[in-house]
Length: 319
Image 1 (tube, one colour):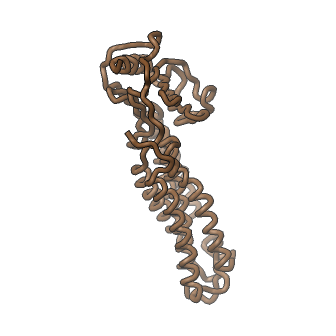
Image 2 (cartoon, helix red, strand yellow):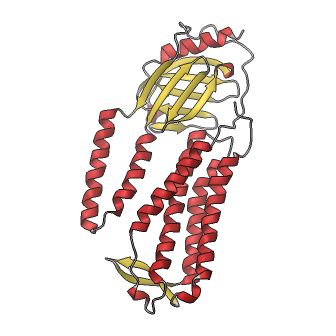
Image 3 (tube, rainbow, N blue to C red):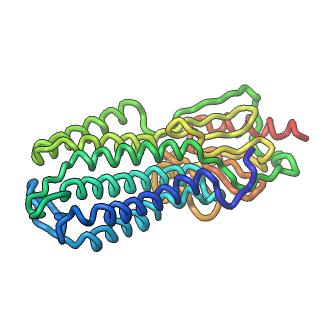
């Protein structure tokens, strides 16, 4: 188990230092290439033609602010070791995708304006937008895989209440929840058709490169694998453990009826108040795992009764 920490070292490195490095790169390149740029650079394009111009210093600081406040603001959440692991991972991927986009766009603007007398002659390559998002998202995914759960872990001091369900310890119990394969395929297909149509209208295919990572992220956030075994309860998302609790932390597991929007205000991985988490993807029975540190995890699944019984029986063995 991870040692309790306020800050996650990997989260600080990827969520804070990477956006800062990107912002510094913007300022350094603006200064280094100043002599090769016109007094005002082209910063806005319509139909491939430059129609908006800004002083280099103003443009560079605008990019710095967007990178730090938007990209860094999102990704910095990954540094908070006590926050929900999956939320930190998601915010890191989103934040670094924005950071990558803005840095790549800045470098493309610099390249388009270098060594030209009239900024109206600048020609911006839209490929940079796709490259920036892909590279930024990939770095975010790498960083997300290195994040660890540093929350407070406390062992339970008593066995679960005798009124809670008990069942045979026939583990592992594995359940897939969230979007099914068919629904996923339909949503991806619709999104792809819309994106292709927009690409044809725009006369450029860079939006496809944006669609792919965004689509994978959205679909990944709505598909989960729930595992109950002798170690405890774990929920996997995008191939990584999103949240997990050990059997030694269990105060009690029960079954309840959940309606996602009524009880958690939405669908998917949810947070309802401090330490109250939910993986809620359908209306119906749900497993509620209460940990000794006061946190609670609710998971909607048809196997809720089976999972609760096995978890309480495993916790009994400790005493």
